[in-house]
Length: 452
Image (tube, rainbow, N blue to C red; front, side):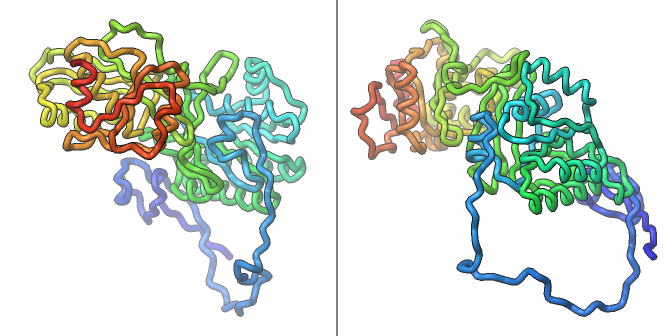
């Protein structure tokens, strides 16, 4: 007979301890140990090893079947996943509270008319879901809804309905009867996800799990949750802005470099098919401190507006503030301007902002950043028909960037007259572009050509 055993488990990282501790020795989090009951089985007699039905095979003997992906009807979502959801795969979608995760998956479920969908909600009642669907203005007779928190009931109803896609909102609300702990605990999340994984692989049912995030911004629950699933998507954005970004941090069936952009409206999420036109304001020539960068996220090129403000420091220590751009990289670029180009910014406040609330990690935006900073410093505007693409090195050189032709083509399509690119980017026919291409090698060369 099984014996009951009590252990203390850290709800942040899953570390086990025989007694309660205030601080976890593994993740160093405070007050995260919760008492849980586990079963300890008696050691039985030795069981003779038996060969299972599974046998090792060589690559030549493994048969592969081409699985047709399930397209969800939202092009931005399908692009991030690599063309749609693979049957039998599990997709984990995480994001800040109120960012629009439930709205995105509900809009997706109601838009898939030719597939059978089961939407399981552990956070909202059936009436709340209907009210949300009414705001979206959508309806789908093939989409079934279930308000349930018991894992056993969810799997039983899913097996009975046999849907093409199962959506669970959220995984932290499910609880298994075999686990003696509260919903959302490390043990419950791990066991529920493992059971859903076995069901999905056995029945070739695609699953989308919505997951909560902790105060650090990472997905809540054990790290094994991200290892179990096939794709991990992050739904990002500032609630003060309209734009939302969908990124893939893990994707077993596609690239992790793709990016989906949405606009939050009262009627739901709208796809942004041409983000360049949305992210660049129609500024006039007499506005200083702005520069346009040609960046690439995934396979998509688009232009973003970078705004800088340089002013005299009101206090002894100058401020350095950045929104949407890495603050450490901003400090590095300011040091390059100070050391290599001779601009004295040590006693001045510098504020940098990526327009639209986006967060960009492309190093090719360095050239636009330093040009916007200098434009604000000397109060001379940059021609709003000029854009930039180039990485700035510590020695002041302009380093080459990847996929320069796509950046140039995007700038030409939007009516820009000139683009500054690194002199190291060669090997393409510049005559086929209807835009003036200016090659630069060092940062001081860029300043002379722009400001004289």
